[in-house]
Image 1 (cartoon, rainbow, N blue to C red):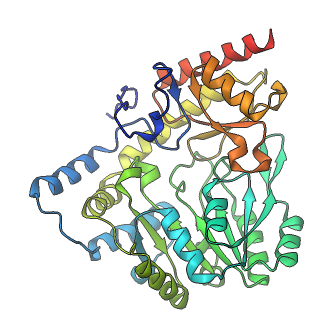
Image 2 (image 1 turned 135 degrees about the vertical axis):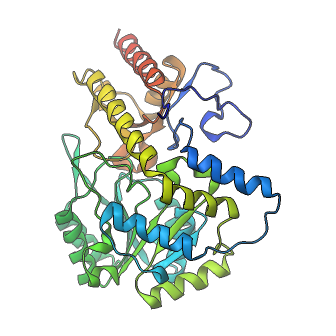
Amino acid sequence: MFDFDQIIDRRIPGDIKYERVNDFPDVIPLWVADMDFKTAPCVEQAINQVAVRGVYGYQNVDDEYLDLVRAWYSRRFSFEVQKEWILPSPGVMYSVACTIRALTNEGDGILIFEPVYYPFAEVIRGNRRELVTCDLVDNDGYYTIDFADFERKMTENRVKTVLFCSPHNPVGRVWNREELRRVAEICLRHNAVIISDEIHSDLVFAPNKHTPFASLSEDVAARTVTCAAPTKTFNLASVEASEVIVPDPSIRKAIQRKMRANCCERINTFAIAATKAVYSEGEEWLDALLCYLAESRRILCEAFADGDGIRIRQPEGTYLAWLDCRKLGLSDNRLYDLMLNTAHVRLHKGCAFGNAGRGFLRLNFACPHSVLREAIRRIRQAIHDCAK
């Protein structure tokens, strides 16, 4: 019913995923975390309906929007969100930045678990906060949290804010309830606020299940700011729509004030229409997408199952694979060059995600299976040639 095998020509001016590949017209870009699939048909219909009106004035979210967001969280995650908790935002990183500015002061420590989505470190440093890092533990490709190190870093650096990625980008972990509970206990002991980036929450493979951080308990909800969006799920990155869920009224008011000060308290009329469409009519498309991505994940992991140069642990969530290339013995730059200049596949340098990512590459497998298979063939051939 939905054609995820269709090849979409994205080589248009300004398309970030395809930028800087003009030297190699045949390059397969699998680096930026957006998908090479058309979005759900309901989105196209909703946006077209807005477009033909020809009037694109200021618009606020209405009760229908809020009710649809609430229903989505209830249906998909058994998380009962109240209307007043929901703040619209142009994007998750806008929300993270405003929350940091609202709840912390310059010089305050903010902790992240590395390797992790690199804008986390950028937004902390860019706002003159102290970056505190806690390395995840690599257990043969299965990453866990070192809770003793986490507690120590919280104490030594007097950390009052933890920026958490759930599900985790790039290592693909879907944190289980017990892991989240232990993170929450440490944060509560230190009176720390949790900023939980849950933009990948819909992209989880069975039998794993996403647990919203704020759903753990009322005490945890009162110290949690959840930043989420339909954009990653439905390939709507440039539509710029997201929601911030803030149960505590005082924290919510502080974030609202900072959003107003930074002029990012509204989303545009197309974003409102797209959000309503996917949260009311998008589930069938999403379920089909997850089946397709599960097969993509199988294709990718089986191709490198022998561990010949590259090792991949099957991600529990996201459409991102974390490739352990350390056996190749190449520097990060040489590794990247091998993929781009020899394999003609553009991947994301693992070192961008922190020092713990050295020797790794991130691969986005949200593309047609034919494209993925060709990328795999090229990568394997490049590794073979490199070993000669």
